[in-house]
Image 1: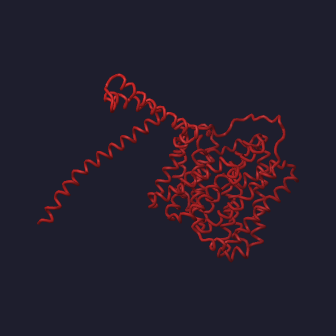
Image 2 (image 1 turned 180 degrees about the vertical axis):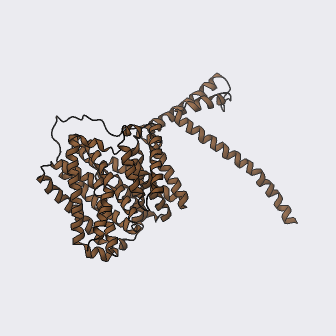
Image 3 (image 1 turned 45 degrees about the vertical axis):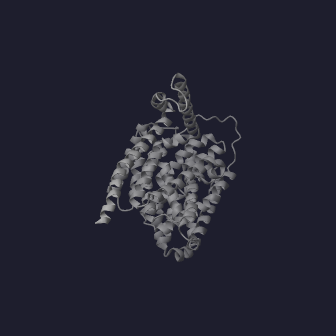
Length: 484
């Protein structure tokens, strides 16, 4: 057949090209490895490997000899010096530190696994990019520090979903599941309740407990005022009670408690997203207001006597031991706890381990590994909100009213009760930030207003709130469910 005969040369050429393509791919891989080694070694790798090869070859348009070899050597060393300068710039900007951080590896693994299981790795990377941008914006800009990093990550997720389109729900669900499952024990392994014995911590614990009580009272008052509207919008009092209990738990502890209560009560994804959106929107206004009401410490004699709680880096052994313990806690919790209560069981086990002697030295890297995962969770929640049409969110306007009333009544009741118990306004507002935003927000507020003696107690009290708020939220739900 002439047609088959004409095809044979093409087939033979394809067979010849395949080894050529493989050779080119191998060469490209070797080149990438050389560049990577060069960036790590500051150019010494190429100077020691490439220079001898080039020095044995005469320069183009010139005679071979010592002069040519010296010229070639100067060119190679100049290139190596440029790579060394690039490496120094990357290190000074913090890029090298971020990329080599174990928390970066953990987040990358979580994103890759979620993308593969959900069927869209690019979508998972988009969520992770919003989480990273939220963390950077929350740490490095005044507006971001006022909003807090989780709110920034969620805001970037909302904007990305509105601009680029929705992300597959399977990817978001897996991202949130992995983030919460690992972040819960990681964050609570640093919750050593024995540290509440100090005098500043005891005073701030009193203010924090008062703030938690004011949150519960504010939720009851707001639910009473909006009961009929919440029932009509959310489809029944049981569903409304779930949202109220989850928001109350969040405003005693932090976002991790909202997630734990929402999972335990099997809340609908749309109501979860709407509740988080409402709480984040009200928090955007509340945190700058709390900062403006907090008086600045004018005492110049106050000296910081404690070291920071979170060192700049941990060893790989510390990170590995902390992660393995958290992984074991998460596995046991999902194997032996009732359906929906895995996060609660995980919280209890982590707090019990954190109270053991020298627990902070044995598993020190929990918060460093756990917080990036929570940023992933909030960015995924932002994508969920951004994918919902605006008119659908407007249907949940009673939730918006509930969120506003919850924050207003919390602040008013706390300031009034604080005067009755003779607590300082700075203590009350730092404790309120620990209730509403968590330990990092409260510590940032104390630092920005020069209340150094409240900085570490704010972290301790806020972490204590993370340990107890989920249980309070579930108990509060049982009370609301029986409300006639």
